Length: 296
Image (cartoon, rainbow, N blue to C red; front, side, top):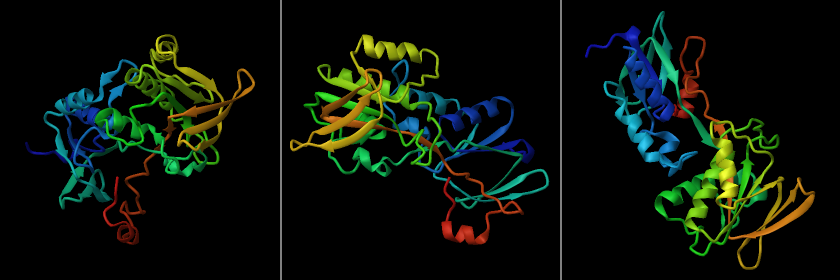
């Protein structure tokens, strides 16, 4: 098909948002080009096991999104090198060596997880049985992580790790951490029916439809304990178990729990702008040299 530059739209990012944008643009009669830096579509969702609040398979959503890309020019393992602003078009150089002229650019580069090791007080990378939400999703998918053992009897989840945190430089709410913690707590209860599971939270922000019902279900049907209060200290005892201290602000009492596994709900931070411009609409040469290929 002959491409018309004015009708061509470059979509940067092959996650769920980028896939949906490209599919809808195609339905509108435009000519989207979907560029993804990795070798697969799906973004973070491709690494997930199940989705809230209905426990649907994450892989099925990615497959459905990919199937909707009929007629879309998808380019994997491809990055943006630089962008020139023409009069009415953009000229984009790709890492594959090809040029694309387009009338519009959609940036759907998504987010990164806050690096939990920066919150040293929670012990990630220090204690053997402290993991992140991303680590746990990987375990759900593969069953492979020496930090998650078969004899798990007590599990804790710490909300808002690196989000709503002035010291971490990220004061915004990540919006999905609370519901993700509830989803993962339910999954852990299904894997370990006899386990006691605790969620330590500041306050629950359940934005989506049916999310509140999901929270009630976690308490009523799965017996998950929710403790309102920031974790003040994480340590390790002589047996290698994780010791968590917090204050239950609802009862006004201190709480000390010994756990087999502690899961840190790392917040999300936006990815940097993939299209830095100088006044002529190009990445400055010194910046290109220092970065090599500009990652998106």
